[in-house]
Image (cartoon, rainbow, N blue to C red; front, side):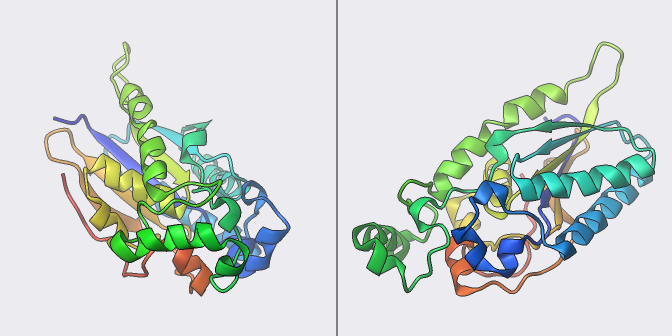
Length: 254
């Protein structure tokens, strides 16, 4: 049976590349910054998280795990600022396994350009999509979504270890995961033992949204939305990269 734990999964605020896809042709994905409005979105997520933590009768310790990409670092910094302003204690660790999916040679390339620039690679990718969706579809010099799911699961042991009661009786109960859309979906799928079909039925969460996996230590894990975030109208390119567009994350329990 799980110990008391709350895992708050935050997607970064809207980035400059979300608003202008051509940025991917000039910047590596690791260096894409937040758009101006993304900073405000991240702060709003921080305020929602702070309000929830302050409402808890016994909040326990709080730890932030952050992807090392620039847009997630900036999102985390805004959340951290709110927590500090409201005197909520926390610490922060960067975790490389929480990085965005790598699009490899497909990064920033439109659907129309792919067959012209990479005919064999695009055909191989499309074969997977036609039979079983994008979950297993590999991108050349990049990753498939199943590879993201594999590496994200590697963080679970660290979270479980950190959630153990310490000698002084204290415990880290709250884990704020600041990551990316595909990685957030992969985390939820793996933690709750959901299927690839569940993954493919979900779109990426809205920018600066906060999904929560929680258990009081006696009940099964449950998935809910703490903060809906800010929907972004995806381009055709983003739909291919991020998955099928559906309503917000469906509730699930394990």
